[in-house]
Image (cartoon, rainbow, N blue to C red; front, side, top):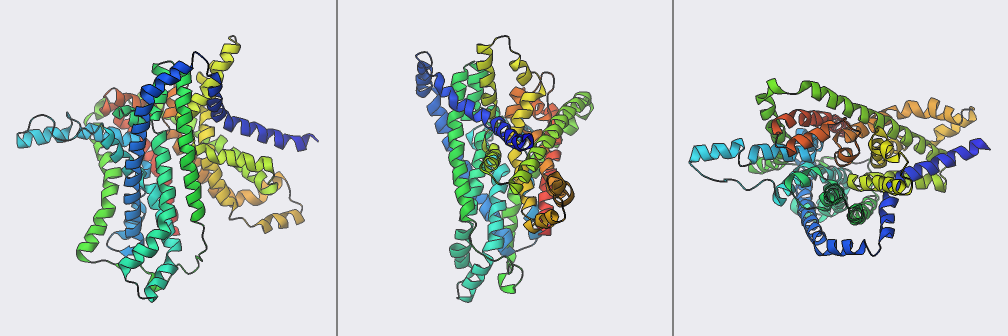
Length: 536
């Protein structure tokens, strides 16, 4: 009897852990009373319109930018043949390795008024004052987000074009349609759901960002949440802003899920290979040069130039770099990343195994809640974890819950599990989808059941997927800034936190070392993804 009760109890606890931050934010509206209503009214009259207008304007501009860049590059490498196409096919993923806030610091150091570019222009051409537009602005944020987030659209659009458009493009050619018409009326409509899904993912990342908006002084909802909680000491205002942000992200998530469903139309993949009719159209001369420039420009803006901008102050101050502190920051980051990766991957593996064996309602609900965690912004998770601590301490002042959440690694690892278990779950479930159910039936006939089935049958086939899941969670934890900034234990700064703090204090030369370390770590999953695409 006990063995039958333990799995439901564990699933219930898992659901509680994953849903507590969101439930706490939603329950904050129950605190509305005669004292809190004036605060809400004041917010509606002062900060909320600015937060909403800035966030909407930023999302519209970023959405348009990532759609154009991602779709244009996907069409170029999928539908055309030109010099360097195979290199660009995987190199266009490189900006995924760059945290947006690192790109913002790199461009600011190089393009600001006191930076080397404007200094060289003033000295070389006898100019005075500001030569270039201010990079720390809404337009600068749009540029940063566009060049770092377009790979979401590129990857999904490229998959849609390469795996679904082949036969219809060939049929249109046989019916006499010229290439421009085939692209306009066949390829682009087929890729539209993929573009919508990629734009939704990019906008969720934009809304969840704190580093760029805070550093550039942009009044978005995420920056407003931290300002309300940390600067104004108003937890109710922070919770209400978090609710608005959460509802906006939920709408984007619904759009992304709807677009993903529309991508699952029928189409055999078996004939994708081969025919010369379906081969990319060769480009020559100026057209080939335009295609090359279209692919090279976003890679340069999103990866190579920021890396060069980071290397410049790093090399200049090489003899004064804080190597001892850097080792401590790295150790903290690796420790948190490794612990979170092991826990998130273990939860994902156990949940996927339970879902495969007994797909009951409770198991499916836990899997769905875990899969939605990545869409919850780090700022919402922070508020959702700290609110219950405040309620508990108000009800029982002698409790030590605040210490365990903010003074130890428990709070930050909890936040990481809420946010990144979805990443591990997706990878593990992808591995399970390639294991036929007949393997389980054969194992049962041979007397292998329970954990023996997982250890002896599933694990040898899942090792690569589990390893990829752990790597993805590890890298995401290393780069995570909003939750880490507030919930990290005392005297345990991470690479992401010190990069933000040093850049905020205009110590960009010292920030270059941890920033470059984050880029190098971020390259690991990008290279893994590029390798899988080349193999496919």
